[in-house]
Length: 259
Image (cartoon, rainbow, N blue to C red):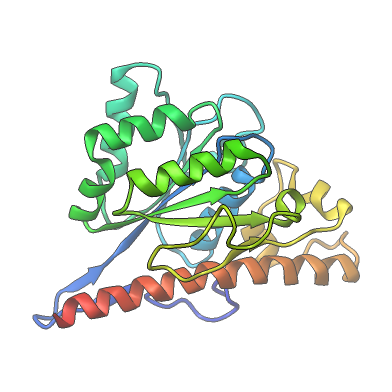
């Protein structure tokens, strides 16, 4: 089976400690934006399928209240969460912390943005995640306007223990200057970007029946070679960025074991 970089599966992020025990720093991704229609759910889908292609366990949590939702595309690995009451809040955060060996992906809608991060700050959620062997990474979809820039600044101030990474969707953020209102000041020096994709292919990947993992393994017979090449290149470029994050996690794990 091919991995997300076209190679055989590897124990990405796994090492052996000095006593021979297997250890792994597990990523906890929070994909978010205070604005809608910025490509947030698309990024969450790509992340989930990146790990599924490699045969790694993934648990996704969908905090959207309008479709299409992450659960519509990946129902088998996605749980729909509800922050409207204390019971739903406890259930969500308990499930995220449970099973530290499973990669977690949280798709935070623009409507749930404020509530999610307010609760996370109040309960010390990211500090607890790190104590449980998870590495929190907040993937913030940047967008024009002061609302997005203000929210990014607040998250950077509230959650110093998490890596805050700006993500530039070229369809939305093409005119925003690099390193202006959205500097990457985290330890993860990865520049995340969703490149432009042709209109016909955007229509294809927006279909709920479309799977990036299935496409990666087998090209649809109905897709012309030119479009196949374009989509393959587009996915590979994004997956290589995810692989850079995984390599950083591996290096952090090794350095921690050597201390």
